[in-house]
Length: 401
Image (cartoon, rainbow, N blue to C red; front, side, top):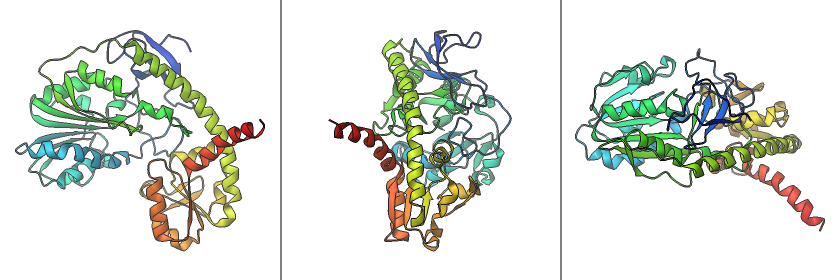
């Protein structure tokens, strides 16, 4: 793709104008194109149209996914695990929760029994949780970029899956540095660019809601450039998220040019494009296989992005499954592709003999819960189905030798 980009666009991390267009997401309603900074390796989407009219909830495998606003609930426990000991050492800690959403982190904080002073910033009034009615919590219904907070007022800034949405993460991080007390903590959690290497990716990862796409290296460089020093490393096993704990440094540190990081990101996106096309083609065979299993009382557990991709790209006839269940989505959407979304507790009455776990992260959990509800049920995972398709051409080639 061309190396031209929007007029005067500069990398948000290093300020370079060496932004190269490397990928165009399919069906982007914002018209975004993914760019790579050839100087520092930060992957970012342009144009930076971060303020748009609120959209309806869309459970989609395409670039238009969004506004379900339940993903942060999966990340609160990991944050508390890392922060509990450090917060226990601070007398009445002052905590800023950026993008508080439905309040999952605040609820998790309460389990620690701390005498904490919490300020919650959440611009979407539709998702405010009970914390908004708690007089002990200051709730600010504004975008973080529009909030004027006092300097050196907080012991901790918690930012979960927020930086990637902003027009300038660097500007917001510099303001986080300002509002933190000397030695204050910053906990950052963002989607991980490493997910592009997932062997069975079928959904569009570069969604319209995200303007920045971080790797361990580029997030670390951005934190250093805005005055932070990492005190804990990301979990190397987690290719979906990057969670870092950093401390306010005594002075801002400059990020170094890192050409190897840029080359690595370019290879990662190129391989992602190839894998995405191949896996979406493989979904057609997976769909045929599942339709053939429909006579066994087929239930699909997981109504999110993978299920949408199965229908959208695999051509799966959703009416062939006996039911669609999901632990979280029934609270936000009533149906997907014409099939009602039920709660897993309904599984025993459905007469299901086979469950397909349409999840990567929670496949094991789904299998355990399904067998508790229906002990003799058969459970197959999305990962296994996709691996079967990947193995088929190899087996055919080896058989022909």
